[in-house]
Image (cartoon, rainbow, N blue to C red):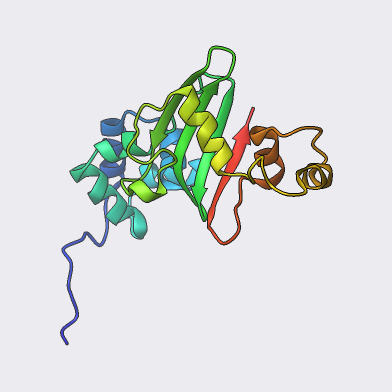
Length: 182
């Protein structure tokens, strides 16, 4: 069987990095975060007289062909007091921003796979949808020995958000979980 070959650059130049960063309208710090490298690495790339090699060459080519990928991967500004990060293993699937007082919810999905999205096809969940989602990520209120389970978690009453804070929303035998930022 013949090995596949790819047309990918072996190296890029400092000006290519600067052009890419400019096209993305990113600071050196933002570009470093986007590339998962340190800011000094970006500075070194941009000051280099030598050809730059490594994974950045492929990343640069992909982003030059598809600059929208940077926006697709960007984290939305946090305008609501509560943010939930819905994960599958170590991958962020959905960001859920919640204003509990005004009962508003905004989401951003980071996957096209509906099974991995917090609300599936629903791109504009209601507050009621959000509450149902929370209930789906913890044990049911009708469960036997509910008071014992709540006592074990040191929670005074049944509240799905409090339960998720204690359990990370992990359910038996699935790889989804939730991180909460207040």
